[in-house]
Image (cartoon, rainbow, N blue to C red; front, side, top):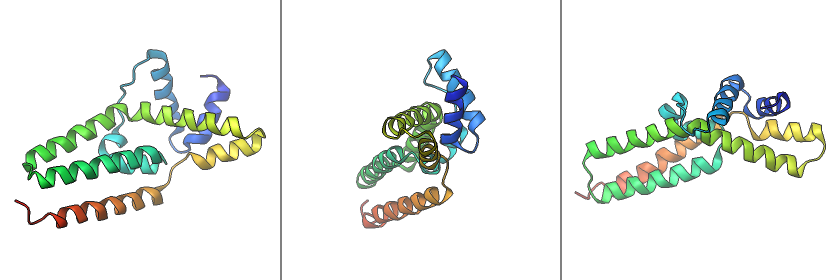
Length: 158
């Protein structure tokens, strides 16, 4: 990464920029997509929301809710449900840094192609990226609500 690219990524990332830039440079150098991210592993959907990765948020939320629905109607053993959730968390932990890098790269490219003025472009990059605790909380509440509807709608199925 050039110094200019690092500066642009710093604008996009915001908090913990040095951590992500270091990880992304290692991903670029090694070509490996697997690199551990504890926040992704521990918080998954909420981490995607915190980092404003909206396509990932909604993709994971839809996948999780469909999986929850299927597990509920099939009366899946709670151990299997727990192991499935752990497997999803491990996958996000393993690929989180790569997914965030690809997302940041595509958003920066999209913004750079549409805004020619450097100051306006930098403002838009910073606004689009960064972090949002409010978004993470809102997504968490949406997920809990949707999951509760599934849980209680099919509570009588055994």
